[in-house]
Image (cartoon, rainbow, N blue to C red; front, top):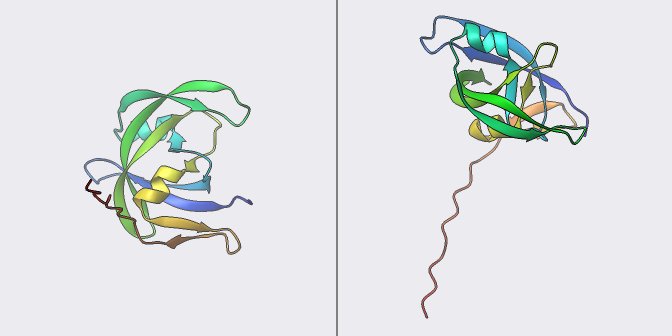
Length: 125
């Protein structure tokens, strides 16, 4: 699938600071990522370390925090990886699901979708 870029705005917890990033939409990435220095400037703190498999098949540990984000005129809290210098910002699958968005690769845009709620059936014996 072709990749494309889309803007995402990260917002400080107090709502006073906003940073708009042009991020690559990457449905193969579990989490979104942003430059670590941007996240730190916005007051986002690392909450944990996660193991990630990279495109070259290497496995690395990265810092993960939670940030307020705005995407397609909605605000949500998203998990975000603290990116390293020179790495492009990414919009990953978790963020797309949180915002109820899917990728339209032909038009290179994000489109709204319905969320799913599956109720397990109880089977009596």
